[in-house]
Length: 172
Image (cartoon, rainbow, N blue to C red; front, side, top):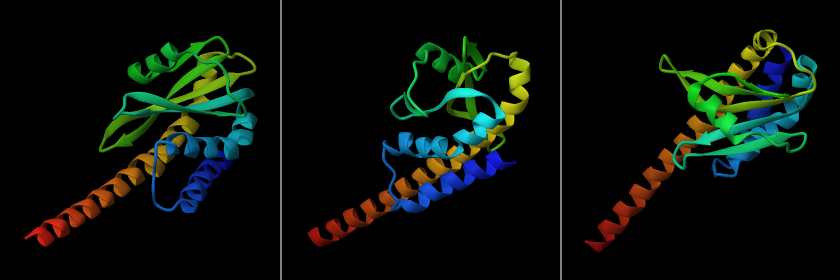
């Protein structure tokens, strides 16, 4: 499927341009980059005016949202409802879909994909097409950002411990 290739290659290209350091800005930048490079394919699949990815930062308990092609108003309570209840939520022209991935035989929600639709169709028709795409997007974002950021954080902690041990040795 072209859209899977587009999402995956976009995520790889962004990560390879980085220097191995992740920041809070990456919670917006990486999804923004993926949306910019996959919007045409998503739009071919489903006529949309815009898309957004809202990733949840579990440490700060807040969402970081990226939009494409431009920002649009969305309902925070519908975003949170979709995230907490792990359900597709439809409100007018907007569809909120939890970004899920399978980790150790458990489905984990990492954020919400928001679709600003041009035309409204029944939720059952949309689930067939979008379910696969959003599940794949959730998996790619998890591996691109959360696992990689965790590895870099762990490496950073190891270096901090090394520097602390060197400092302690110098004090002795």
